[in-house]
Amino acid sequence: MRIVMTGATSGIGLEAAQALIAHPQISLIIGARRPDAIPATLGSSATALPLDLDDLTSVERFAEAAVADGPLDALIGNAGIQIVSPQRSAQGYERCFAVNHLAHYLLVRRLLPHMAAGGRIILTSSGTHDPVQSTGMPAPRHADAEKLAFPDRDPDRDRQAGLAGRRAYSSSKLCNLMTIRELARRCENRPDLSFLAFDPGFVPGTGLARDYGRVVGWLFRHILPVVVRGNNVSTANISGQALAALAGDPAYAGGRGLYWSMERLQPIVRTPSVLACDETACAALWDASAGLAGMLP
Image (cartoon, rainbow, N blue to C red; front, side, top):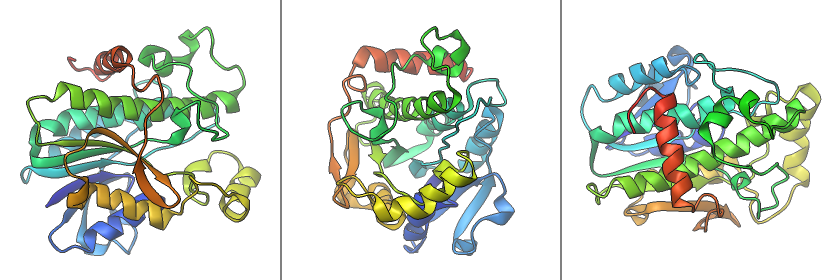
């Protein structure tokens, strides 16, 4: 069983990767900025290939290398960033949108033709995509790819950098979920494939807040894990185990556009936000993302 994974070197992704390589029948291929410096716990059990999600050219090269040895059984798109300062990707797109959504959209499109029978594609989303959930994050206003890629073109954009950065994150997670739902709709010719989105819940202590500054980052890593309580609070280990199960456990096979979310330390199927369920909006995001990635819809 050959699985390709992004975001496997820390936090939830590392826990998932370690759970996967515990099964000798699984061959794990991970993308990393520095393949020679992956965590020692992965050792020689995973193959690390160069991947810089900031650069779509790197994504293209990674996809080509990942399929060189044959079909794939699963793709786990788990890597993500959350930034609170204006930053751009190599192609000039807002960086959070580019890394969290556009790079994974391109990776999905490139690897889809190489998925084996019964294969699965999983993208990590977030409860922050849904205004109904009280996550403490600003909810997405839209899923307009052009405005998300070029915030300066959005007349309703947030003027405060921190707020804009947090909304860019929740919007990118909405895009991940909408991509999975649209993927299921467009792949009627591959009924054998599973397309799943995963909300790991609120997992304090990960590196997601590394751009927040020293004080806020310290609070996020050391204080929030102690004081925050709620049905959607989880740990890196528990959510990582759930993510690994989505990729390899037969119980999760056959899902078409399902949104799995952690609740009371267990993954459940949850109804996405109203916008995520808008088929017209999902199709528009898909087509616009293709243009930004230099592809045909």
